[in-house]
Amino acid sequence: MNSLIDMILTRHSVRQFTGELIKKEDLDIIVKAGMAAPSACNVQPWAFIIVTERNILDTLGQKLPFAKMLDKAGAAIIVCGVPDKDKQYAKKFWTVDCSAATENILLAAHALAYGAVWTAVHPEEDRIAIVRKECEIPGNVVPLNIIPIGVPANANAKAIDKYKSDNIHYDRW
Ligand SMILES: Cc1cc2nc3c(=O)[nH]c(=O)nc-3n(C[C@H](O)[C@H](O)[C@H](O)COP(=O)(O)O)c2cc1C
Image (cartoon, rainbow, N blue to C red; front, side, top):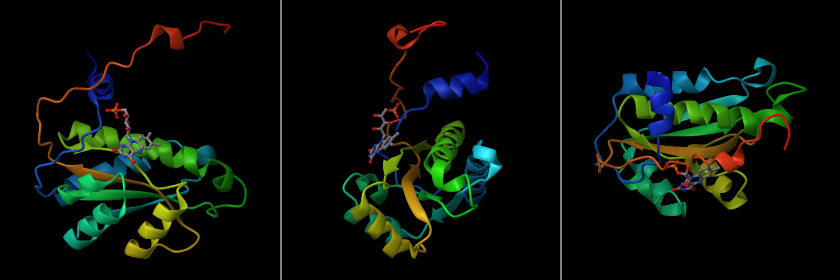
């Protein structure tokens, strides 16, 4: 099978990591993949915080209810939206654009044999406040999610097959 299709079909959320660190050059490739995503009118209303400091990973893991796996992640990427990046498109489309970037990041991590998972921040105001404080994010920038990345603890974990023909319509509903 085409290797990209194979990567898309085998990607799955990984929540258990060995604790090993992630090479800086791999993190650079992963973020570059995020930036390659499409965005409305190519405004690219995003910014990426690469978190490698152990104390920040641990603090975020302790304070965020659904991101406990940060304690064993080798790094994390916080995908942030910049709704005031332009006057027209970013405000309307930043969550969509940043979601496209997020999927690229998840796929790139998978292609490099790391595990990763989307953990939600926006639109939960309490989570936004925690991440904003810990990572000193300015008020005009909104963290959409945190993506813990690490070496998977279980090398045999598999993707769920989500193919459902009921969800497909040809020509008309
Ligand atoms: C918007 C969004 C928010 C999510 N939030 C969390 C989260 O906070 N914590 C978590 O462990 N997984 C989170 N996930 C991952 C989903 O649980 C996961 O993608 C889903 O169960 C399908 O599994 P898969 O990624 O292995 O295909 C989130 C996914 C999306 C798209």
